[in-house]
Image 1: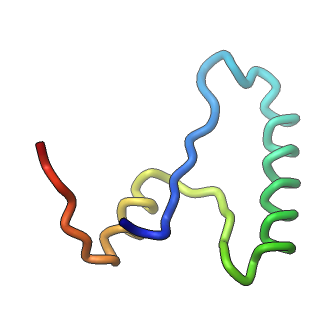
Image 2: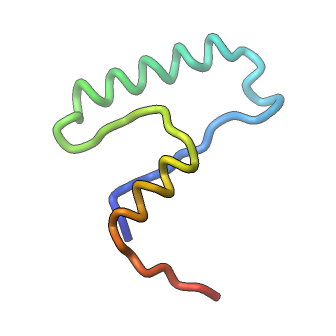
Amino acid sequence: MTDDLFVVFGDDFKYMNAPWMYDSLDNMIKYMNENYGDKYLFKYSTPSDYIDAIQKHDVEWPTK
């Protein structure tokens, strides 16, 4: 419905080594932006930033 994608990572116990995890994510974000930055923007974000981004598309979401 939109081109925005929200990817959640981490939890209380799965990523106990936060410095290693963030170094890995920093490297992945840098690589993806350098190689695919003409099509995509990879960044750290928050759930509220994601909601704000998809609301800009003025999409009517189905409810059940």
